[in-house]
Length: 302
Length: 209
Image 1 (cartoon, rainbow over the protein chains, first blue to last red):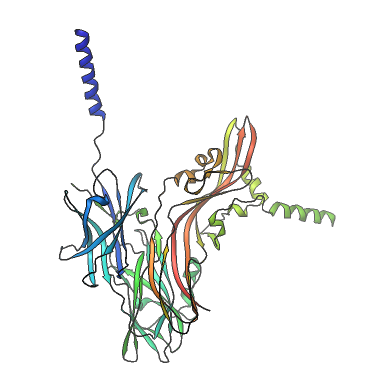
Image 2 (image 1 turned 180 degrees about the vertical axis):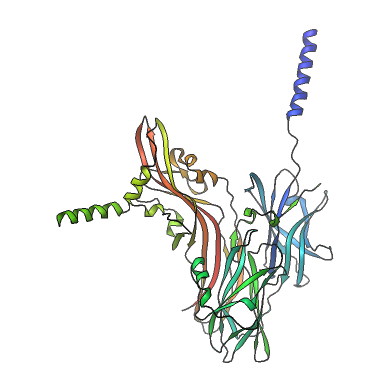
């Protein structure tokens, strides 16, 4: 009898020890990137958002569990509805740990027509059937649509210049080779990325007389001195000329910019013109490689 | 005169590349340059380089690898070939939609010379006989992921022009030499190189036909 009691006691003690030693699962930790999303929307457009999570055993990134999605502004004043297309899952190092990497791709719901939208601090909202909604900050989110006006100015070449201002690899400026096909001067009055936190600085831009740009970035910077400054923040393209313009970007807040459209407003005589390039992925890099914490937003859902 | 000729021949022999390099995609890039320092690609190693690097290997061992890294995660920039071309041989501009899938990030490619070989293929490709674990850079980049993004753009292609998507990028290269021993006998030797792609840049360019 004593032996049985001793055995039961031993088994109970072992079970208690096992329970104490076994680790409770860590709280869910999701990492998002403070990024500038700026798109020109068409029916076939795809928006992608990337997140890291320390766990993959929750419902949060299960396609079957997500019943609805949309982008909301900081005041929840409006919701931009999205249809979930796919979720790609992978593994990626973040700091000293390995995290689960999720890439969520969405299509815009534009049944009511394409609208313009600008959220300076946006979040992706995921709606679940049985669980509370999840709101994940994504940075800035802007959408517009293609709107060309006139054909005096055509784009011959475009190349983004990457740079790291201390918070990760991002677009530092852009090289634009533009051709004026008209028989009169064209004046470029404004260049925009349809973004709020990153603004092209046309007044500080530089001209290069011959078309084309250097093949490597080191040579690119050494050629700056040969450029001539445009005056009064306007760049003049003489009749039937082709010139390369380097336009640096000003960052008003910390953000990463890898994919963006270009909106070039110009004047021919007294008529306004607009040349647009749809959002283009200029830089393909690891968004989570930055060593600066300002580049990230950490979310710990309940 | 004979002595000078002989010396010249020896010098030529010493400077000539020693081994054939196992083909990896990055070796087919249009150009690839180290950002700084006096690093060399494995393909550019001369006899003199091999001998200099082999001299860095400490003595024989009973079994296994002795390795030396001449370059460790040295940053490089490169230019790949053109990704996509649309030709407009007509007389009016055309608006063209095109789509391409971007390459994966943080992927590694390996090359080797001499009697150093590979095992597996594609994502699972590695050096034979466990050389990977001796090459720090390679071991670090084992923790990688595969990310693919589709770029979809609509653009005007002017008459009598063609449109290029240029691909540039940055990466890191580690390379060096290694010798494999069995019962203190050197059975394999050669050079190894690990290329890690970190970032790609895309540009659009129209060129007259």
